[in-house]
Image (cartoon, rainbow over all chains, first blue to last red):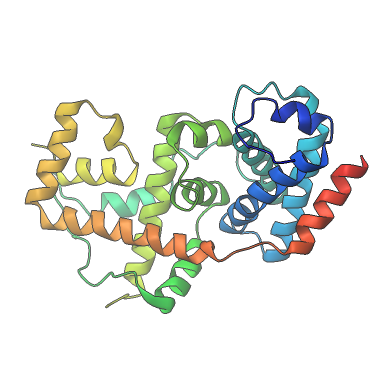
Length: 193
Length: 75
């Protein structure tokens, strides 16, 4: 029996532990869940364990799922909470962050660049990928997760806000910080073409 | 006229889409005229695609899929 992921009856079939429905959901979303966990900074093994736990919780809670949001949103939400437990992520984005000061120092009083972005930052090739991975290490897990949900999974703002339980403004602050942190870090490593 | 600081903040926070249309036009005009901000925006886009490439090849093992399936079926 085939299973369509947009089937409105899918939640019911999952609750009934119907094999084909379970297989379809796991097959579709497991790669995304593992990728997001890796993106948030978990090691490969940790990411697989947490993905496993995410699906177990998903099934345990399937009876309370009202189907008002997308299954994917719900899965990512469970994953987020599990990563928070492991990494003791701070619940709220901090009021200040080192990167804010760095960015302040790049503009003059009129809001023009006093230190414009270096012309040498170019993000190509394997070496740059490795440097990017190193630079990501310095970002807090929640910012990283916001960033990978946006850039790798290409989810829209509303869905990411639901998953991370933040406001649109708060998500904007997180993305601003993680992107600038990465850019500053790559620039300081002298990434050139 | 929007400042470089306002434009770069809008770009980095994905905020441009939520601005009123006059400001959205302001961001576009500014990017057309300012090479520093254009470079900044291009760098952020390039960093996004580097991260996409970094994680795109992360594929879970088939055994993980099976073991999850096993543990959820049993319960």
